[in-house]
Amino acid sequence: MADRRRLRTLLLPSPPLRQRFRRNLLAWYRRNGRDLPWRHTDDPYHILVSEIMLQQTQVDRVLPKYYEWLGKYPSLAVLAEAPPADVSKTWRPLGYNIRPKRLQAIARQAVADYGGRLPSDRETLLSFKGIGAYTAGAIQSFAFRKRAAILDTNVARVLFRIFVGKGDPKSHAVRKHLWAVSEAVLPHKHVFDFNQALMDFGATHCSARRPKCDDCAMSRFCRSAAR
Image 1 (cartoon, rainbow, N blue to C red):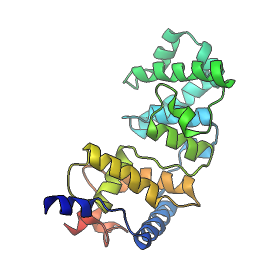
Image 2 (tube, helix red, strand yellow; image 1 turned 120 degrees about the vertical axis):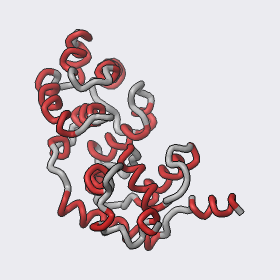
Image 3 (cartoon, rainbow, N blue to C red; image 1 turned 180 degrees about the vertical axis):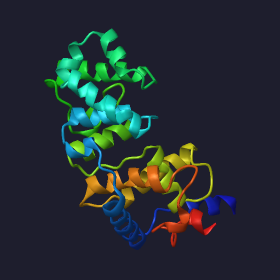
């Protein structure tokens, strides 16, 4: 019985529910989406920098460093040739200091193997040390406007609360299922806006500690709100 209940929990949302979720989310984003500088570029390097900086770091701390970094290292080629000590110094005080080293390693691989550019296909992006499944999807979606799913902490929280509701969101089975949900709900059009909306909704509305459930467009079909 427990296995059957778990199986029902991990079913993908139905097509009508996917459409309703997309419609509500995009409408919410049109009203509440944040105006961020990396949303006004399709430069894969700029997208990469923003995504690496935003890992476990708040947007307001990233904004000044994002401008400073790109002013000093305007391309992958420039970053690849920079002294590692200068790169680490420029990164401060964002923390998690392995990240600038990863960025420079990616830049060096891009220069050595791809003419100083980031490739657009998922398999090649994943071959870079420091680019995981989420970052690859973000680069594909935001820089190359490809239909690519994403799943960071905010997105996983949103999809788990709305479409799963029970169980351990950090378990391998649930995490794998959430990737499948992210792919299932992804529209064929407006992918850029949809993925940005997912991240904003998780960061500002369906937040970890104070979700705004009383004023939520998803509350009528959200499994967590129902409980």
